[in-house]
Amino acid sequence: MKIVTAEQMRQIDRECIRRGTPGHVLMENAGRAVAEETRRVLGTVFRKRILCLVGPGNNGGDGLVAARYLQGWGAEVSVYLCSPRPEKDRNLERAGKQGVSCFDAASDNDLSRFDGFLNQADCIIDALFGTGKARPLEGIFSQVLQRVIEAKKKKPGLLIVAVDLPSGLNADTGEVDPACPHADYTVTFAFPKPGHFSFPGAEHVGRLTIADIGIPALLADSLSTELTTDDWARATLPKRPLNSHKGTFGHLLVVAGSINYIGAAYLACEGAMRAGAGLVTLATPQSLQPILAARLTETIYLPLPESPPGIVSPQAADLLGERLENYDALVIGCGLGQNPATLEFIRSLLFRKGLPPLALDADALNNLAGIREWWRHIKTDAVITPHPGEMSHLSGRSIAEIQSSRLETTRTLAQAWQKTIVLKGAYSIVASPGGQCRVSPFANPGLASAGTGDVLTGVIGGLLAQGLSLFDAASLGVYLHGKAGELVRETLGEAGMLASDLPPILPAAIKRLKES
Image (tube, rainbow, N blue to C red):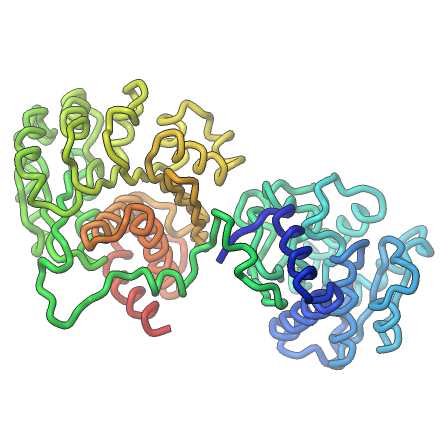
């Protein structure tokens, strides 16, 4: 599913209308979708008191349509018009004929009528501004929304449903006005917008519903940013033929672990095996092999020379280089540490030709960050999986700059470095060297714990070994990792979720995806 900017959405709307779908039909469909979502979350709207805040433009029109439907279904709906509507507004007239009480803010100088509506309301529909509002909220709009925010604090059960976007949230950047409310639910139309997944705005969206209002998906086919979905992930999963053997699903080499980070090697291998890789070989400092063998019983081992103990020796690069042709993919970095010997090992291994498909994480990235124009020395595309701090070290940009523009930063650097980048975090972003971007739909605080990134890199490596392209392996790996996190959250909650909880759940996540 494509993610579109505000301007792209306007162009799509115009093209849809040009092709024969009238604008009033799109608005009718949008308003009904808001009404249906409101009825769904309330359980019933019969005798529920619903206050609809209506602004100018199409967003207000959508709100008026929603108000009419809800009134017809038995709700007691009041519309508060925060700005004049056009003369002979068809939707305003139809709402009035349906019995909706419509009140003009211009006649409410002290907002006493508004306060009365607000105090009695079970639900607020925010239909003030959608994708067209990028300026600061002022005047009556700011006053009304600030009162809604205060009412929500006093009455947490007050439901807020936003039309397209919570008013004051920038559709393209995720920036928010101080008066932007925290919606419980947001109903957007046809395609999600970047601001739905960009912080701080993402925290104001609540649960997002993407409603089909009759705009053909093909109108966005040329756009390069998309939201990963169950349908896409299901179609991308590696096939599992009945007459398979372990070699069918690839052989992955994982180069990981050091004396201080033994668990990282375990987590990466477990992630790869649970993602379906047929064979996984762990290359790790030789003194760590007995420790890891006690837990990783299915893994093949390639003990590496050490210098000092527990740290991989630079000489290990030649040992591995002679064997790389035996593997379908290579993961390197998880828990390797940042000893000078490690830096020399990484430089010697990665700056050679003939590498298999490659995923780099953690200390591979931390060591590379100290090498000027490191990306030029790696002769092929590779998946790199930085968190914002590692992205800062690699790029020289501040964390604040990266986080304020995650999508465009990731896209720009993927093209500049000619590498596939996974920028980890809530709503992780995957960008290809060709400029395509995919956004994960998952934001799970439970995944913000040590080792979850090692699992993710292992999953991506396991998918690479099974033959997926770098961009698809990275995107599907992020998706399956997030899906597993959601399943763990369902049973354990967020606090206390461990990285080791994820690998055993990955097969269940894949099974649920196939069967859904």
